[in-house]
Amino acid sequence: MQNATAGRHHGAAAPHGMDNEHPNWEEIYARGPRWDIGRPQPAFLALTASGAIRGRVLDVGCGTGEHVLMCAAIGLDATGLDIADAAIDAAERKAYERGLNARFLRHDVRRLADLGESFDTVLDSGLLVHVINDEQDRAAYLEGLRAVVSPGGRYFVLCFRGPQSDSGPRHLVREDVTACFTEGWRVDATEETTLDSLTDEDGIPAWLIALTRI
Image (cartoon, rainbow, N blue to C red; front, top):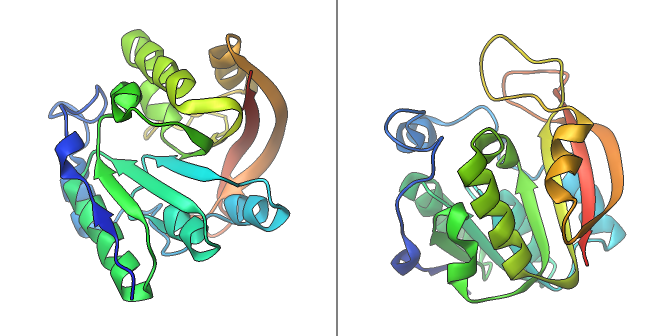
């Protein structure tokens, strides 16, 4: 049986939106967040089935690792990053129990370049909404993405689609996302879809946006 590989040496200060003044991600993962559905999101499963997810894969904000393990199950070299130790611990347990070879690192998404690695595919399920509101965080995250995605590599984003609710994470219009990727990226497709959730029977309205690094 192959086991998950841990990498805690990449730990760093939590980005804005993930610090003590904002949601406590350790507590959230300890009690089980509503987006932790115990399986991959259907939109990403469909990308896998189509062959769009390929090569070395990085999942930013991987949570308990379902998308990383989805990729590992078809033989891809897959790495997941998250700021919460509880999420990483759960992901590693899943990999061990399923006999899958996957790597999970506790890492600050504003410092992707510090990995010193390049990837062919990057997956982002819900992370972008947590960095897009802060100019410095957004700039650091986008700079890091440009550093780790190989030319011709793909970036697939799942994020909440408007209208904005009274509480919870920001819901984005299409232009919120595409405006972030005017430098060094080509927007290939924007599709309306849904995010499965433990608390929303019909799913949460979402965007699936596909981009290519140029």
